[in-house]
Image (cartoon, rainbow, N blue to C red; front, side, top):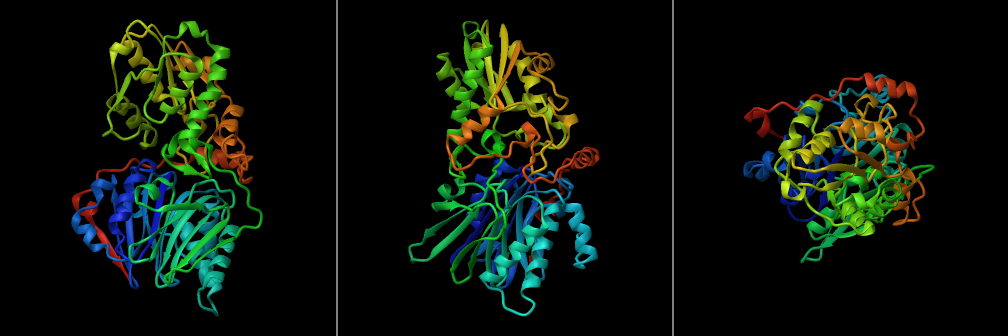
Length: 505
């Protein structure tokens, strides 16, 4: 899972790209990068770590120019310990392209070989994003063989990308001397939106981002989300064009964005993330009422932060007291997106602290957004009991996570999933030490989202139901994925590596 942003203005964009990445930090904490375009010269700085730690004043001074792209990364493919796989990525032909990608390609290996054998392009990392960049570059080369690059040519190139690439992808790319390109995969799995702002001088500047929160935070007006398969092209003169570039697009946004990943103050595909989480509480309450004796529950308590709206609405629906019993240390990384199970388990108690006054002698209904690996919840249940809870019930705002996700979320193998072997709620309760576990129903998840945008009929719920909307995922693919090496946890970079920047022309 990653976050992307792009800005096209008549004023320097380096500070605002930095600010936007801070607003997208929740989407990836492994690495970050910013590249700007000044005339025909790109300037780039990227490194391992958090946005606030990577960019120093000297780095920001070097990022000159009125256009740029930014990226925050959590690896689902490639090597997390290598700064070479941090984004943005650059290719010098045609024209010079600076590129950032959120998603995951499901045919990356075939494309990589095809690029080498047929297109004579070499991929120097294990990142599928570099593969996608080179497919785009090759398609732009093809359409500009005997003509200049214009909007029609850009859209023809994106159509060519859609025909070759499978999986999920939301992309921003700067083409040196030409303009800003953004496009979305034909299923609209990963989010991407764009907005504009009129400066005091009357110039209309443009932003493209993974989430609308960056628009609000930087004073832009959200125009809309890109449609599945759609591309946006803004040339350097400020002319804006959009076009549908896919032959048979369908709208299947990732349900897990609303459950967990996205910020609650974002709106994705017309659905408020906060509103979706409230709605999840409404539907979860129906299941809890069927499965629990409410007279045996003293308080409803969230696991901060993403489950809080669901827990509040659940407590309201059940007419039960709502209490905060866990205090979060905000300076420890989110355990779900920390590479490596051992690191993830170790950090649970660093990240949360229980307040015994809220647990002593009570029967607690804990609410979490999901139970993926179960490591975090097992520790949390233990902490609740150690703090004096008599009984600990657990409710998940999401259904059982039973299948690998191949579209950019770090849950790639069944062996790592608590319910990957088909465990039911009772087996999960025994595993994590809870008195009972209640999961959201799959239909409840779908309805909670569909209620807020009835034009979307099918969400990507593949990690819950095993239905892969791209239609190309086989058991053989999943088996191969399960045997593939996991991304390595990032090593601490030395000072030189951490501060290294680059300039490309």
